[in-house]
Amino acid sequence: MKNLTDVDCRGAADPARRAHLLRALSWAGAAPLLALGGCASAGAQGIQGIQREWNLSQIDLLNAVAPRFPLKRRVGEIFDLHLLRPKLKLRPADNKLVFGCDVGVDETLFSRRTFDGNLTFATGLRYQASDGTVRLDGVRGETFSIAGLPGRIAEAVERVGPRVVEEVLQDHEVHRFNDRLREGIKLLGMQPGDFRVTDAGVRMRLVPIPL
Image (cartoon, rainbow, N blue to C red; front, side, top):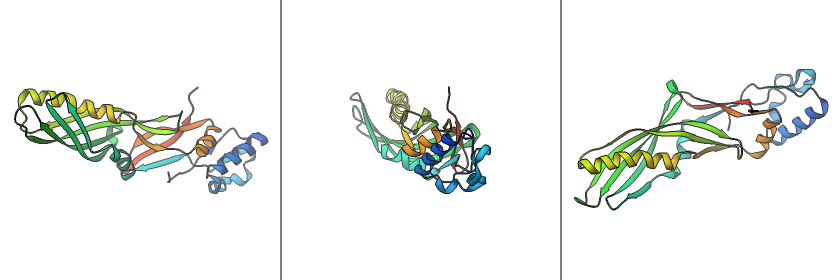
């Protein structure tokens, strides 16, 4: 991840701990940043200038989800559900990512016709400390419409469609921090968190590791 900005690294006044921290952050690829903000003479002021902010672009997020599509599910012997061509809209107002996709329904019991429609679902993000990943969280279907389906089949599709998306995409990985970077920021008592949806993507900042 790129676009990392001003970090304030505390708790490194002890010389031995500071040396260990500098080595870890250097291994993590943060060495060029250590010269910023007075890092060269960290001393009692702590280590300054280490990255604290990451940005995931709209394209990054869409590319992370795209491999799950196209998706096909058979529901009983009544219909086949196809989810195709994902899209992404950013919704900063409620801090949500809103994905949409085209939907195809092959009705196999009566008319044997194919019906088209669309589905949207919203999700947040969370950090999973055990493996250093950022994952979709709280995936929920929002809108689902299929034109022309017979009544009972339409009801079944409207129940199943959002549920399929929720099951498939809940906890889906959208980014992974490398082990060295994770170790470096862990030494600061921090981890990625505070996910904020912006007009350009998602901003992630370091937050204290929960006790």
